Amino acid sequence: MKKYWSIRTLFNLGILLAFVFGAFAPATSTLAAPAQARLTVVNHSSKTLKLWLSGPAIYRISVPTGQTKTYAVNRGVYKYTANACGVTATGTLDMTINKTLVMPVCGGRISVNDPHTEDLGQVLKVVKVEVQNKSTGAATAVFKGPAVYMFTLAKGADKFYTMAKGSYKVTVYACGKTTKHNFTADKGKKFVIACS
Image (tube, rainbow, N blue to C red; front, side):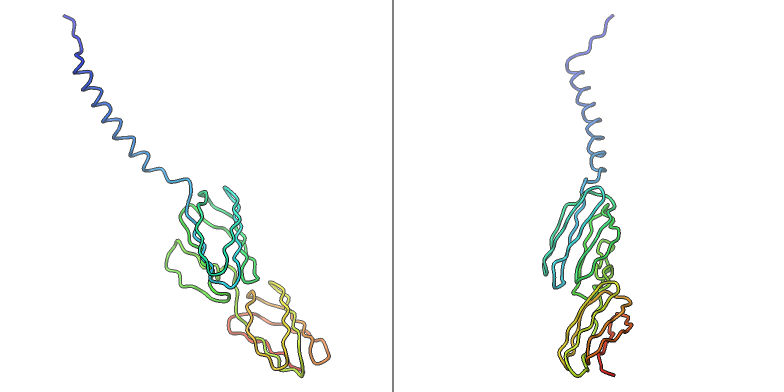
């Protein structure tokens, strides 16, 4: 005796197979990560922050002072160059996860408790330095080290400048002569220009 499949049985079998295969399809698609990660850049410094990323893709990012911008970045590890507060630094950036980069005021720091947030002030290592002119007239000081700076101060001036942290050779033009000095720029340091 021949057995024939009824239309109703085939229909029920088809629905059952659709449920079985349909149950597996959403599970595999939810496991796949999106192709891009979110990069948020916050700039609290007094000048435009520039950031160049090179890796799975190339990005040139510019964030004006006091602004926050968000970008969709292809996931991966990038080499970066950051420029802010007159200082340039390089490093690597893991963009396999969402990240926030914060540039504090020049010479400042932020408190970071989130593994997704990085303090660019720690990378750029900018410090605030006091420069005093106790000479008999106007004076100019040229700092050469991790970066180059030139400051001209009126007689009796006492000013604060931000500069890259590190060791400098300083040439001072004051009191009708040129003198050479060594100076280490660090938080709270002071450089005094005098005639003696």
